[in-house]
Length: 136
Image (cartoon, helix red, strand yellow):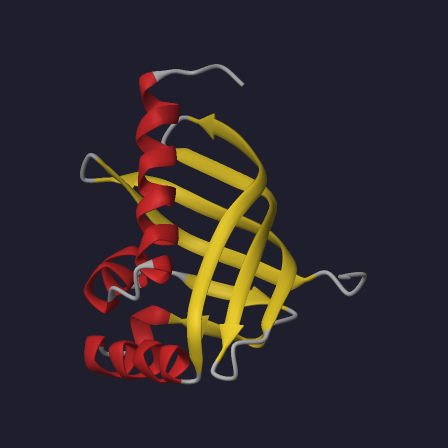
């Protein structure tokens, strides 16, 4: 992958989204997802964030985090392509979830996300995530 300034900016935007979930930061989570339409096995119905309020998003994220002790997502691989003002990232990441009883689940997730450069900054506009069923 060619390491251009655009690639670094886009990777930084993607990392802010991942960090928001790892850090349980509802404000950063909203900022990273407020324009996203999501789809995939995990979400058979479109998750159109533009139809959701910030308060509802924060409530959903806080309730997700209340059901677990810890969450950590990390990339196994990440591919980046940029054409003009559109960026596509895809690959597999691992979610390590520590349950309230201290048991740990490790799940591999295939993902893709589409980003557009809007008003000079990378904005995630579509995202797909689905669990890989051959997980250990």
